[in-house]
Image (cartoon, rainbow, N blue to C red; front, side, top):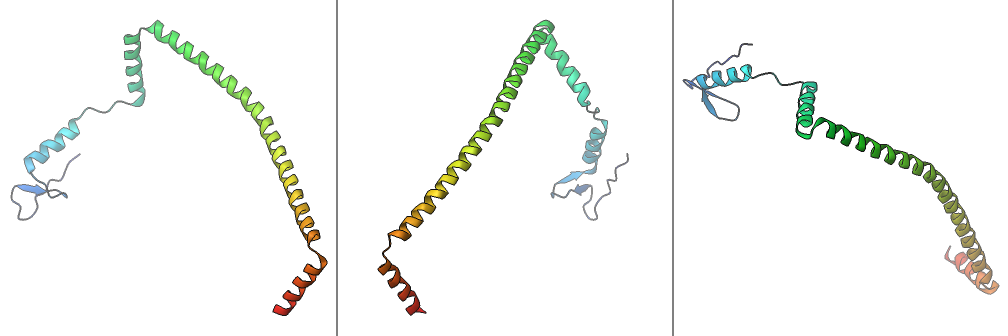
Length: 138
């Protein structure tokens, strides 16, 4: 890969980057060369293997394996409990929904009854007066 390090007109032996920082061509050439000569980065698989081997060395292989088995066992127990609770919660959700619908229906009925009771409690004379006022306002 060849880099174009052309000089800007009127700047002499220095080059201005976008940020306004001026560097000599020699500096830029060495910098770009260092970027090109960098060792390639490890792949994710290589990185994982290296970390895994370092972990096994520091913790001891058998201790780590035992610890992993313990974690797996705990995780399986947790997931089994969660699934069991999930099935029960579906029932309870259905029960809650039914109770809510029943309560709303009851509230609706009580509101209707209150309204009817209020209408019945108004005397015929008051009803007639209200009607007259409504007719007069038109």
